[in-house]
Every structure is written in structure tokens, then in C-alpha cells.
Image (tube, rainbow, N blue to C red; front, top):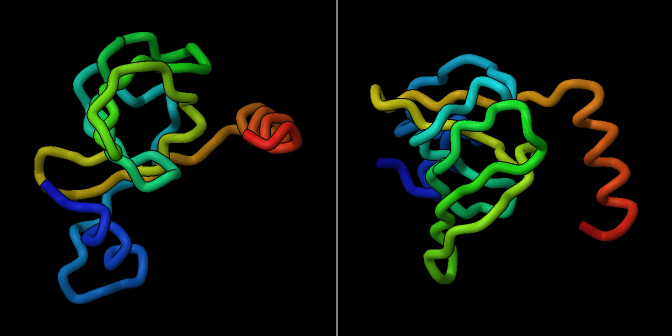
Length: 105
């Protein structure tokens, strides 16, 4: 499994970069997927609700906790073959992020 440092080296085009996957939508994130959140923490998706704005996830941060995360906060999805898929947001999701950031979230 890759660490956050590996992902950052991947974004910077380092030599040990994992194979680049494809661009995916938030609807394509499934139950059991390991993801990287925008704050740099990793999480495992627990629920199977693909169209909800929040997803239930087990987050590995300062402490391991389970709770809701916004699906728009998911940046990358790790694949079993070692490649990394980039999550791209739809126009409506981008508007939602802009409204949420206006309130400081």
C-alpha cells in the first residue's frame, strides 16, 4: 500500500511514482475502496451508497475513526494493482465545494 509521501512523489513525477490510473467520478467509488482525502489522510469506504453527498468511511488520521466524509473530499482511489485513479468532480459537485468553502469548510 502506498503512503501519502508516495502519492505526493507521484503528483510531482518522481521516479518511484505508481502507475497512473484513469479519471473517475465520485459515483465510481465502491464499498471497500481505499482512498486519499484532500487533507492527506487515507480512508476505507464502508458504505455502498454511490450517489449520496457523504460517504461512511474508516479514516486513518491522527486516530482511526469511522464517520461521514464528503464525497467531494476524496482525491484519489488506490487500485489493487498499485495504480492510482484521480477523482474528478462534476460541475454540480464543484459548485457544492465552492458553497461549502464560503462557510469555511
